[in-house]
Length: 126
Image 1 (tube, rainbow, N blue to C red):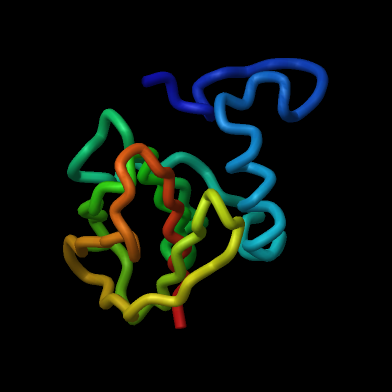
Image 2 (cartoon, rainbow, N blue to C red):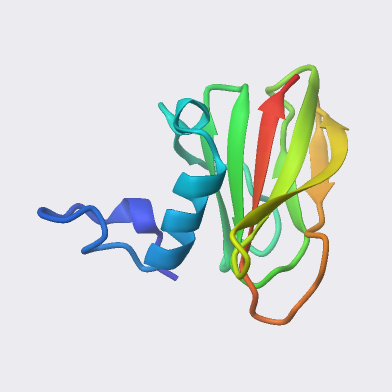
């Protein structure tokens, strides 16, 4: 699977976006300030063919699970506690989940497993 950040295009921001509806949902649900400065991060340890991560230093993460599977995320370089919310790609709404602790690998499980439904986890340092 080609990663959205791997392409460099010109023109409309959505021209090269493989998932424009999901990107729009993220822009509506996750505050711009939380998304600023995010870059691709090689922190996903499972389902790497259908999951990836964007990070802002070690204080905020967007974790994409395009198949809706649980994802292991390596937070060994990030200390502290993180709030977790899941973006329902169908409804475009955020659902709060249990906090996780940094300092190791964590398993992030979307609230509902619907085959083929994309979920995006939003983690932010508390």
